[in-house]
Length: 308
Image 1 (cartoon, rainbow, N blue to C red):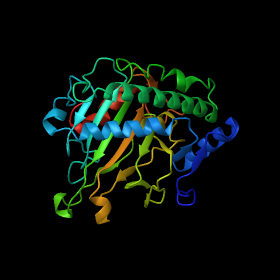
Image 2 (cartoon, helix red, strand yellow):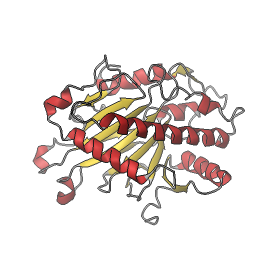
Image 3 (cartoon, helix red, strand yellow):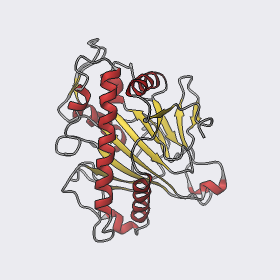
Image 4 (cartoon, rainbow, N blue to C red):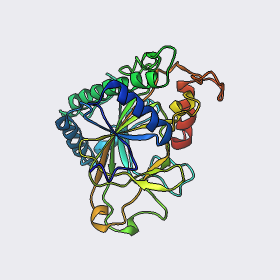
């Protein structure tokens, strides 16, 4: 239903490259959020990842905790309910649990419990990486960079977590049997902008995601069949001297009882540049001090986890 999504522009990747580049540029400078359709990621493989995520989150909590994210695992692993607070000023931790997977060959996968987990997630990580690099190539042209391949070149280690922080994140928003089971003012995911360069988001049809419009109002993001939501992170906004927007968004707890009682899943792919990349305003304006990608990320991690 394209009409419903009039607030979030839709980009059809079957169009000519020229049309895609032109529309990406317009939408990233104005809204900062788009839907991609005909993007080449097979609906069946997306379905499989949702099923895999669902099986993982259905495991007993003590099993999930064996795969907990810690300072040792870098960013990989399981994060329980309310452990993350994406809006540090919010009243409570986010009512969600999640599992982070990087381009790592060596982190502990839940193979004993879910033999298909690793191959499914790795294959999907690769699909998302390819699409991300394709978008970065178009953005390099859209921004009329002297070297249009610059953004792709600075993300070359997307498959290697010793050099790059790109992460595939499985998210589970548990059902909420009654409004008394959540705290006052609590959200499924607090207001935040993403950290990195570019995010791909796959969501189910239950909704709840809201995007902050330029006028400060929150608008509901509709469900687009086989559509991928793409938005930009704070690092990309800084890199482009705010030519491109890192739009704040959140996931609310549904008002509708029937929907609130259902579990919601989403899958996010957070694309990041290689760690040592110096993020210097690409328009030469020096609007922001140069900073390396990993230092920038460390500062943001400290705010939402309490450690980097």
